[in-house]
Length: 193
Image (tube, rainbow, N blue to C red; front, side):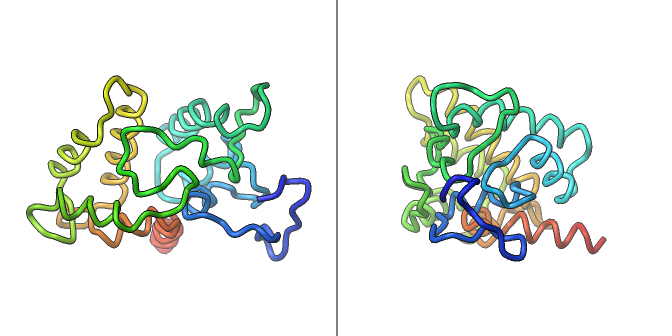
């Protein structure tokens, strides 16, 4: 994506020649004003849109921006506003994850399928809470405590947000997370309540 100053907006959508990666699409839900930069206030609003409470939304916004902003910012100087630059989100990929995004933020279908082939024991198209916990163990890289913590938070948050009435995380839900459509789906469901 071009810098926010070189992007034009058409009907509230960033318009330029950039083809968004699945990882960029995954985070764009949080870019409320579609300018390519996500601020903590936008992340807070996005979490509220998907039905998270006030405290949880504030805590999530602070935690996410504190951990990701410096990795996505161009240059060496941090910003006290803790922005996350969407086009640089690939630099915030943490270790000890599933590998379903490559280092450029592209979706890797083989790694996605591997999640379910290796860990969906009860049902081939869904994961139980215990299967999610067990899946995290073989993905851990030695001494990558930051990656372990991030993978734990990511997957437990996804399970909490996306589990169905049978307490299972379906393959379709996980795919929607990776392709960037899950948050929009949940926001629509929450708005209709």
